[in-house]
Image (tube, rainbow, N blue to C red; front, side, top):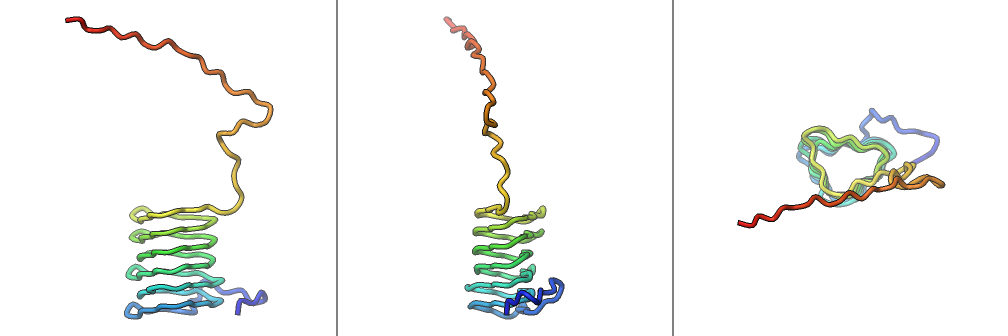
Length: 146
């Protein structure tokens, strides 16, 4: 399991949890996982993809290459890419290098973008002087003396 020689085929679903199934526990595999039912708690760990179908409800910690959410998710995701598709709902923490949010999707939680950190836009490069701010006189107000 998790051998470096064999790479999983991302289009092949190795594990499928049907719409009338409920699962609690930890699942590790090399291939992709599709969930159409309910995962009440636990962990999913794969070198492949995790697909959460439109009717699925998942409460778990997920570590995968790509996670596509069309149903409901609550927990933590650590992945290269997360796709929150139309109708998908997610609560929790998502740590990712690439994130797609479709129109009609819902996210409440924390999105942590991983990878190379871009330069801070509000810090002046070394040696540059800040732009001078000119104080303008305050507008005078006329008191009404009626």
